[in-house]
Length: 389
Image (tube, rainbow, N blue to C red; front, top):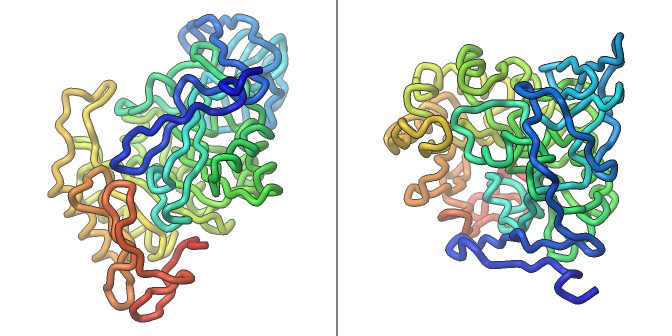
């Protein structure tokens, strides 16, 4: 095997932000890229072509029903599947009466990212994270920014053979301090992700869950035992909006936020502010009031700018003034760390809640100035919430 097939061919991209990507030339050692024939799987076409058995794994959470049907217990949708059908996520299937994951060791995207891209601003700043995704998602967000991989099955994407052990090896090889499950929805490739997380812990690597938070209790509890940090998207604070905009429900996401906080997972929350959908400042105020009471004032909240994508291209980008107003509300409700995301000119500086001095100055994904030592403000010595070392 030549050297080109034994290593990742890393390309610098987004150099202004210090971003490194691993493009489609990726080869795990001993593997090669593969493309499976496309198929219209999912709720619109229940018949499933027989997948390659190497990339199929028995699901960790499900129950058997009558007539060889199965009920998925990975997320609150609880899809009931007959043989040959896939769930809403397009990643779980009933194969001849067996409930399986189609997302085992077959990521479609692998990159080395700055941790700030997730976005996590209080978790190992300036470190690299080994980021990966498998196709699929249990939501149908009208604004999805990664619909090319989230709204299809792993049977429809160009994938790579990369075992959990190889993921851990490659993360260490490229100097990453963590592994991030991101880009698509990691709940849809739960078995693969949680296995990686459990192996990573034994290798002194941290793991990061970038997710919509729509996961059932039992799999969430298992995940939290090996998870270090999470960036959870709280889409809105109204159930009606969750159903119409995202194809989900609010309460299970709230349950996930509270459970992760109680489990000691470092948590940061993202709220995408979409004009006409989630830009109601009265709703933002209610959300922030709940946030402080349930998650505490030291949990970072990111108000992220919307860009017209996918099925909402007719909407304008979020006005910066709206994002600043949301941040002002969050601070007035008692949040210590409220950020504005996707607006580089505004910045995402971390300020000491005690003395008001900037402890981390940022632009984009870069840290420009650091005035924090051992998790304490370099000016007044007050502890700043986060995972710094």
